[in-house]
Length: 83
Image 1: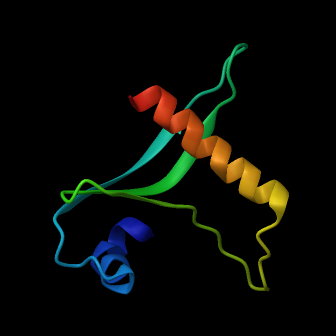
Image 2: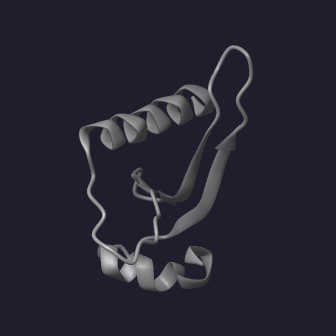
């Protein structure tokens, strides 16, 4: 769904004038490392990367300490694999 609305997402983030590439990232897990997925990445020409975690809920969603740790682990794994 997000790939159909890239222009609207970039506008909402205030980065609509910045050239970028958008994609998702998936690392399959194995016996040595866990797998992970990043839903939406905006790789910008101004040397910044926006990483978006996308969820749909019809109620309030709370970002807990445990959920924050999972997000940080996703970023760590993706950084390690894409260096």
